[in-house]
Image 1: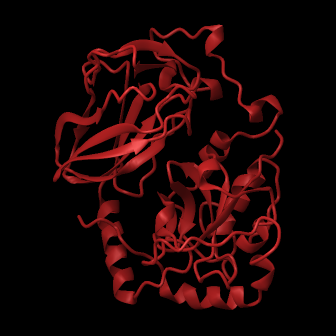
Image 2: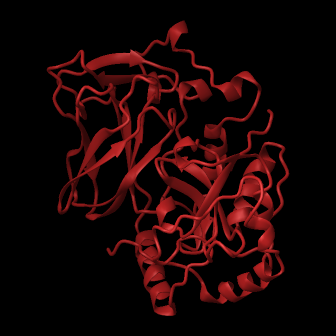
Length: 373
């Protein structure tokens, strides 16, 4: 199956331009918290204003239809999965309330004999798959842990900053994989710059299907059989200490909206799980925690503390784009999912998805808003 490359309903574009024409662009290009949009990616945007042709839209819809014909499939393998987790030379049995099932393995300068750790996965059909990883994050972890995925064209490597995005699924990437039952994921033991953590991976068929609905023990998730947590494993985030919603909670709530059809609002209503656009889903997620936001990406920019650097992004932060260029208004909003991905209602995919931030034109900035519990 072709990898999905483009999306949007062209008819909605005209309605959108009518909507943004009523907004003052100048008010959004200067003042506190404003920034210059990035100009790196200039292809078809996966946000609200895609610039896609009708033929491109039809091709995307065909790809999505082919993907939807297959039943949902996912498989999770963690450090306690019998005969599917091979970790020669790694230290096993470490525990944390942010680890999947409470335990994990790691390699560091103190484990010089460690070899490549491997996860064995069952790939039911030759198709495109999404791979997710899970790990507890500490300052001791590697900022460039290497994950290799066995694809139909060879092993592809990517790096993860394991000092960030702990306690929930982190999307590693999308891969074309051959059917079979084999060691599909390898984690390199690292170069001594920090400890590399191997906890759990999830394989999901399709590039827009959602990861399994698991939570860390800290958030009420299960502890694996044979794993015992002690008092030193209890982790408190700054948000939990001051009674605020955590980024993990925001993302888990947003994940419930995945696959909801995209409808621009206005003119369509903001209708939970039925019709949502970019600012509709963020409005609904924050409303769940008692915070009212307007159904407008332009107005949502005015809420929360502005985050000026991408390196400071945390899960649940609101992300904003100016797809029409610096002189225009903010056109798109999403939620930071981690590892350079955003959870958002995309006119490109015509539904709520998790996709790469870099494929949306004109990144403008972010805000952090953590409602009180």
